[in-house]
Image (cartoon, rainbow, N blue to C red; front, top):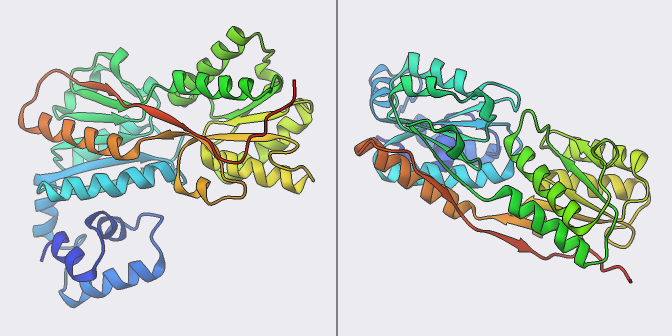
Length: 336
């Protein structure tokens, strides 16, 4: 009995089964129950059986995920786990806090087991140094570029965050918005937030728009609750804004809820845009205008790179996949 057999008998994808076995968030109780019924029926013991643990140690690929509320990562993970399992490897997911040191976690994992490779979803580049090479296994960083680090065993697949943020500010400008607030992560902890902020600042400067990070930039973790709080902060520090760019769709949806609770309409009173292109944003009211990261390409390209490097180690590969601006209903066009 293998994880593929469990997936086939339960009717769920390999990635879903793997997440259930690893007690990962995002799995409904009904789904977990149905999978565990198959597991128990065949006495499959993924954590207690020494033989299986040895198998994992010999053919496993580790996925280290930063944060537990990132719905973009959930979509990428589903495809990654299926692709990895279909190629004969065992994917194991580790969730860590947004502020945790993912490289230290990787070292601990490698001290306990011998994975063939590691994927990092969400990262602080400050933690990545050439010491990573001592792990002697290929690694891939997703949604963040590692090209500037020049670490021989660290490849990366990402979108151009700076260009995407620049494009969104330009889009709001083209719709008549001149006073724009921004909700984003802490630039010193999140390189994507730093890149997106740089894109915002570059666009503001090019378009001749005022932008004060003290008043128009609200820090937040990538969650609904923090998006809500950040929007309330912007209403206090920059009450004249007509639009908000949130650096994740989850933040944007939290911001929309805050605006509604304060008696403001979206987009009639304040326009709101996001980043990621998760499915939830297209079912919200109003539908969210956002930057769509192509999670299919991110997952498939990163898996292909890592699996190739496992068989044929060599120079790190760094790829940039295209983004797309998706127009929803959350932006209004202001009169000149």
